[in-house]
Length: 273
Image (cartoon, rainbow, N blue to C red; front, side, top):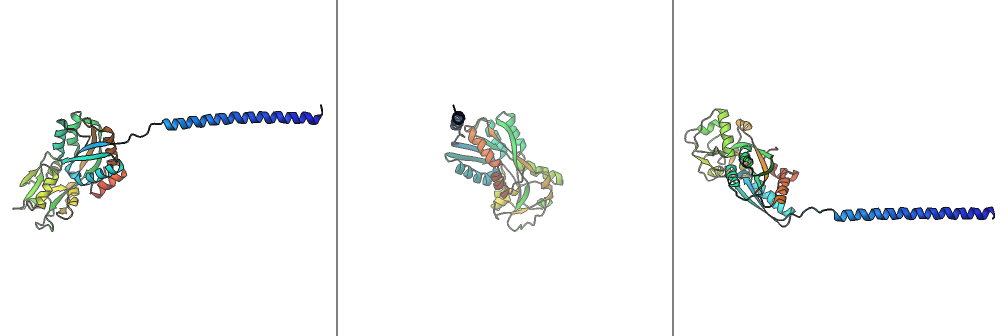
């Protein structure tokens, strides 16, 4: 056999071995790709939210939470957010009494504690905003109120939230810090009711939250006072064990705490947690 023939056969054997190796690698690659595709198709998809979501929230959250509720429904077609706005203590009593709700947003840790102590919360509540007091007067401030002390003027009709309500407890704290004794013409069960007394000209002034003055859009005038800095309320939020839509409840809380949710709350006058 000539040297030329032997060289040709050796070249063919090497080429055959290379082709076999290439086929083996191709088979492995194909098998791997198929496996990867199979894994992707079997990966669980995020559950689609649907159904009603019931939110119990402090009265001072009405405007901002209503906006967030509409945003939530827009992001999750098939859901419907229903709200119950009232004094936090009233809402807490309803929850511990068995009222079905998915989310509770309170205006103070004390009222939230009523719910957690009863074992009605699902998980630990988290603070999502804070709120500060302000004096609401009639537009133009005809009574010339510039401080807490001015609320003691003879003949001035002043309204406070009841001391069991977070805004009332905060007002009492501020008044004590200022050493002021004040006898209001009425105690209201939530901050919106206190504000409405001024809006309806049934009172000259009320101690409410800055957010409520802002939400009133010029129908009242706000007067800041330094003692309010020592009576800022933390607002906690939690899902509830008695709720009927746990997934949607957690998603609503996530929206409230998100950058978008915090923007809506910040524009309403709430402070960062």
